[in-house]
Length: 114
Length: 235
Image (cartoon, rainbow over all chains, first blue to last red; front, side, top):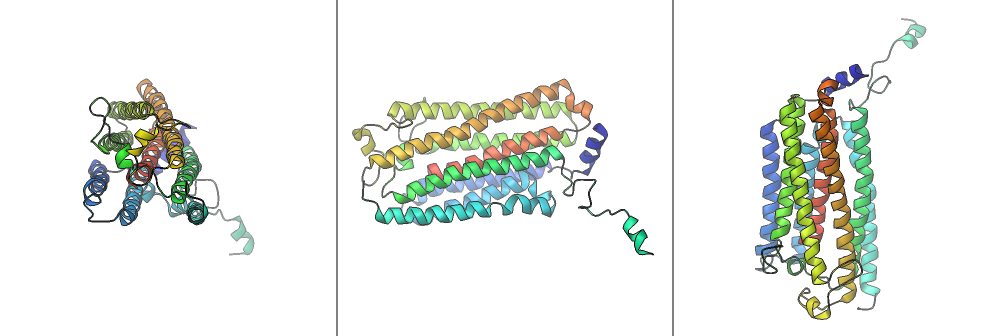
């Protein structure tokens, strides 16, 4: 049993270098700081509307998610088959989001104001 | 070469069996599949939250709701405390990935210290969350509970809606609670793995793959927080 495991351990790619880890940390921190600047300065001072700000937040969040999954969770260095298996299933979530936003939009227009 | 001998040939392609086609260890693959199912659960919660918010004409303004730094000030510091919480969680993700890196080099001592740092980060996050919840409870929020009309007036920029406030309250405690429960489980798992490391279990096994598996879980918790943070505190 242990022999099999050792073999796999050798199969694994070498982990991230320490330099890369701190680089990714820097990116995550920078994006979070940018989000705070938008929330506390850009939008209150009317340089950007809340509506556009929301889109910016979502894009920045997806970038952060990419960095966490790709580097910290090491998915960037896995085989393509595994990458596809894990990411393509999120098409259902995208479908669900679209579905619920359409439903929400309908209710928004048709529900009495409370 | 006759056709028979071709059939007899041993296939060596990744999918002809006998080895992992993705060269991923079994437990790691199962952790990935668990995380996908967990991601679906969190997505459902967040999508429902989004849909609810989308139907409403007004919603409590996060800049006005989250103004306190427990123990320091009750108002006037929008998003500062949650910023601290976000920083703590990202930082503990970094210490976790450093533990994984040390595991690759099979440096037991370094793995132990990075795991300890990760556990401390997790506990700090839970402490912050407890403080924030306590503050909101004192304001009158809770499952099925909202503050009185006087307080609510200060939490909306537009018109006040008790239905929106109630939906916000229920969804906030449910979703951050579910996330906090994940952080709590993560801390417990990390403590177990730390004990196993100290006992030399992985040293005997010859590899530190287990650190990678709990690492995947821990990063996932961080990943979920990134989304919770955006949709509850920023948008």
